[in-house]
Amino acid sequence: MREEVQTNPHDLDEETLFVVSQTFKALGDPTRIRILNLLCCKEYSVNDIAEELNLGQSTVSHQLRFLKNLRLVKFRREGTTLYYSSADDHIMNLLHQAIYHAKH
Image (cartoon, rainbow, N blue to C red; front, top):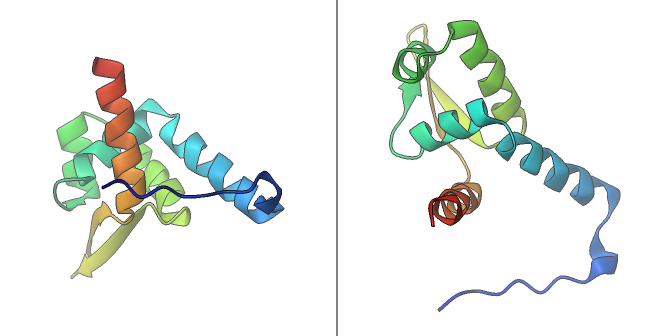
């Protein structure tokens, strides 16, 4: 059974509007979509993401910082290496629905 969220258009305060727009901004970038899609299955280090997606390490770090600030990814430290994973199942579901929609 699908849970329906009831919203009142008057309930959108400025902070909510900003967070929603930033979330869609995050999902509006092909590089960030690729990173989030990769992180849906397991955690990766910056170097692993860069290698897996054929991207520069600085590009990956920059995008992860953006995603981390929105709390869409989280990290854990092991020694000097940071391992990133998805932090928000709701956003991952939204991403996968959008991918499914685009393919069908």
